[in-house]
Every structure is written in structure tokens, then in C-alpha cells.
Amino acid sequence: MITVHINARADCPVPRELVRRAVLEVLHREGVEVGDLSVTFVGDGEISEMHARYLDSHTPTDVLSFRLHGEGEDPLGDVYVGHAQARRQADEAGVEVDAELARLAVHGALHVLGYDHPEGEGPERTASEMYARQEGALAAAVEGMAAASVGAVTR
Image (cartoon, rainbow, N blue to C red; front, top):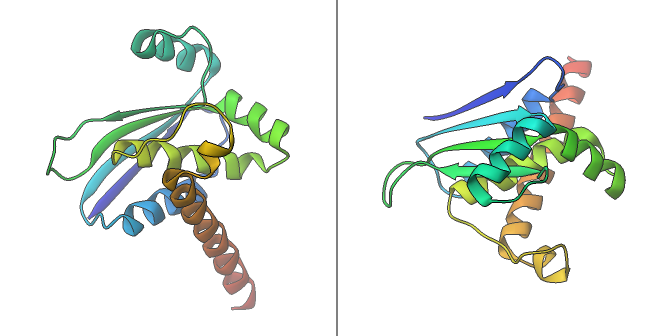
């Protein structure tokens, strides 16, 4: 059984069902059958503090991931998404905020599973295996949400 915990403050509106579906989608695609992952959405202050504490960088970031399981153990991890940073990135990229929030949750889940990507925002990053897995899982989750809403309307 896979458990996905989604946590957010009242001032951080989150598309919980989309995030849950997207994280479950990537975990299933990666062959995970048993695991526990928490995804927590935080503001700039908290994500900046964590970024400074764990990566010695004093700016807000979009996502931080903590792998809490050992080699050969079922996946266990915490993902922290910078809600305000995600909103800024969505605006800059011209994408829906809900999709960006789910994308970052999936991105963090992949880091928990051990994936990494090239630094920076260049073509090497978007051509990486991690990026392809991330975007594939997100697309499937968005399609699943759309199909579920159509099914709910036609019933």
C-alpha cells in the first residue's frame, strides 16, 4: 500500500486530488507497491529557512526532498514545495498554478526515489530521464482528472 500525505496551510490553496494522483502515478510507474510519502506546501519564509539549513542557500526554492529510507527499503520521504515560488514559476512559464504545484510534488517524489537531473534550467535538464518521467506522470494525472470529471458529469 502506498500512502501519500498532503499538508498545506490555509493560505496555501492546493489541488489535493491532482497532487495525490500525480504522486501516486509516478510511484506506480516506478514500480513502487509499498511506500509512504508526505508532501507539504509551505510559504517563502519556511522554504527559505529550510533551503539555508540544508543546502546553505539563502533564497526561496521550489522544492526540497528528503529521502528517509535506506537502500532496499520501501520508499519513505518528505517533500516540501514552496507554494509562492511555484506560483511565480507558473506565471513565468505561462502554466496553470495547479499543474506546477503537482509537477513539483512529482519532482520531489522522484528525488526521494533517487533520481537527479543536471543543474540549471537548460536543455540538458529538460532532456533528462528524470524530466521525462516527471512530465509523463503529470500528464497522465491531468488526463485522469479530466476523465474523472467527464465521467462525473455524464453519470
